[in-house]
Amino acid sequence: MRVSFLHRVFDLIAPRYCCICNGRLAPEEDTICLSCNLHLPRTSYLDQPYDNDLAKVFWGRVQHIEKATALMFHYAGSESAYPIYNLKYHHRPEVGISLGRILGLEMIHSGFTEGIDCIIPVPLSRNRQSERGYNQSELIAQGISEVCHLQVKNHILSRRSFHGSQTSHDRWERNANVEHAFMLTNGDKIRNSHVLLVDDIVTTGATMCACAALLDQIEGIKISVASIGFVDPKR
Image 1 (cartoon, rainbow, N blue to C red):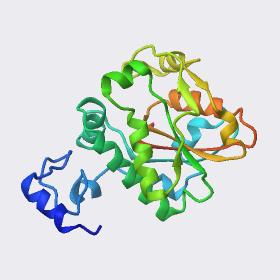
Image 2 (image 1 turned 30 degrees about the horizontal axis):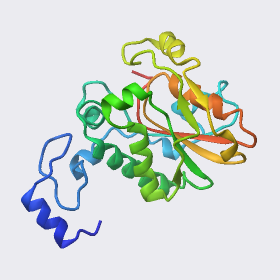
Image 3 (image 1 turned 120 degrees about the vertical axis):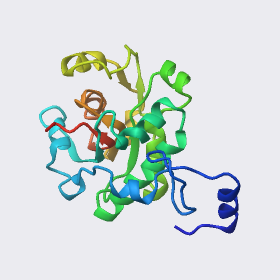
């Protein structure tokens, strides 16, 4: 990454720190230092985008599913989870954009984005977005868009209701919690399109499947999915 002289000056005046190890970032580093980035527990799903554990979450539940990937496995309480915690609970919106860029660059290099027409972030309820100040999935989508040059479409899906956080619910409760929670608002605008549905973390896949099932109704649709974190089903 080319770094301007002005950027280097700002780094001297207001140093930036890695959101994982809290070490000072070099001018060319963005939110996560190189060492921490290299040690993220990556899924390697980009090597098998059509047949991996995340893709299998959608098999039999979404007809027009194509590819699936996640940047890393999400282990609650681990250091690698700090970026997500900073994004969701400590008002660090820049972390979402940075994570999106990291994921976007890796998707480009693997060819994952070939044929994809646009990005659709999973919507957040009005109350939760008002509390947080932003939708973290939109920020991740923005970061992906910056490097992949794909348009983000924020108004295809909307959240109808919110019944509390998914965090404390088991698999069945998560499915019930998001049933009928979303609605399709502008599906005609993405007919015959290949869309990338984006969220921050996939645990059971209940939220992503609820959104994908709505998109599945659109004529000529193809759906691929991407997230920053995926809860390792083997643990």
